[in-house]
Length: 208
Image: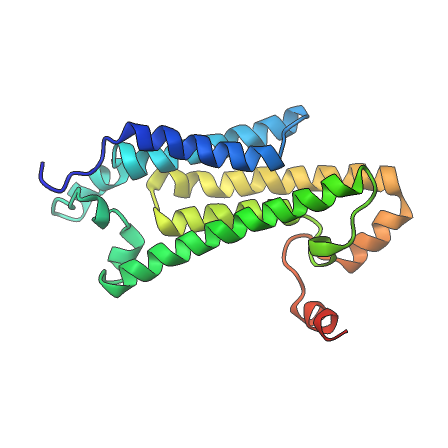
């Protein structure tokens, strides 16, 4: 079929391996609940790249619903960009998705680096001055970027479940931190938001 650019299973395997290796190298699951969350993230990534390069299930399912056959040309698989009118919007959506994923990767790495250097001590500096869970925030931004870049029915349905699992994981980890560090962590928790930095606080910090 002319313009049919799917069925590239090598690209599927390489993309899945890259994303899983990079992300799970810095969000290493150790406990059972962490493995559950990592498993859901793995399923999200597999579903994403299988449709991006393998088989476009979402386009196939939507074709009869819109009354016409959607194009299977790979460049027209960015459904959000097409919904906004294509053309320059298609390029904007692609770039925005890529920037969000890159930003997510940077946050995950920045959080891991601080924790690694702390060698078991409570981390309250660097990116941790602004949010208590920068790595999970990075994962959130990364997956939002993936949805912007290549929205599919399966990943859109999985995303809220994935976020709920990591939110619950973060809550459990905070209870462990309270038991380990006591008042020191409680003071830190009261001062720093869980995921989204307070703009006013960030502005004051920048002025100091």
